[in-house]
Image (tube, rainbow, N blue to C red):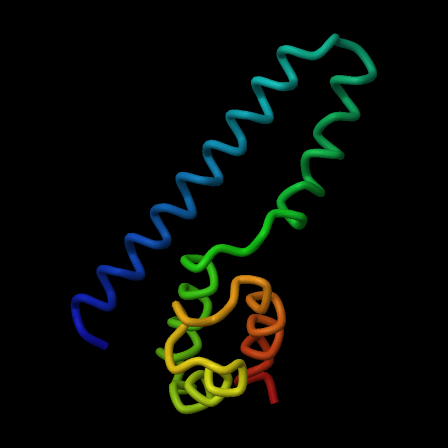
Length: 110
């Protein structure tokens, strides 16, 4: 893998980390803004389920596919992209990201 690809992946991971920090800061701000007591204790439970509901981003999907590609599954990744009607990830409809990720996650597990 070239230096530019590694740099691109590092930038993507840095952006994902920044988004996580922003989300944590927002959660803390919401916790402080809410009334104390029981509601404050229950709020983190609802917040922890929120990230699962967030839509997948191109960057997060790219990071997973890049990792699979580095693990020797480049041909399979290309086949998955073609299966979803695209030659490259940026051409994939964001609505198909979860299905694409689900198929990519099993690569190398069998």
